[in-house]
Image (cartoon, rainbow, N blue to C red; front, side):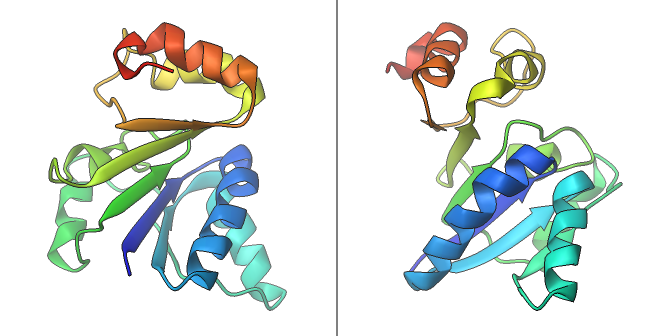
Length: 151
């Protein structure tokens, strides 16, 4: 089975990524959530309410400090991110992964403008291998910003 990192930081990421993480865990994959911001807060609340998920709060990692996480964590087979990762909040982790690690970004509907700010091709260092979209609006935005990925 695969080692999968889930990297996120916002409430939307929490809402979209945690069900995926739960399902991947049920299917036997090892899932580690590397989170910050509202996503970390929501996972901490879940833990207090008895819903335990393995996560590491990476809030306020220095952008260059994110590289050092590889000194004590195994390199994953796959990384699933939300669209809100930024330097110090997960972007450095993703950028420093070896090229053979599959990178997938979940793009949920309302996040079109946020997507263009954070992962838009003109504004970003990070281009995922795939986008996972949940509606036609998100698919259209992804195709406009990253035409090389196709539909």
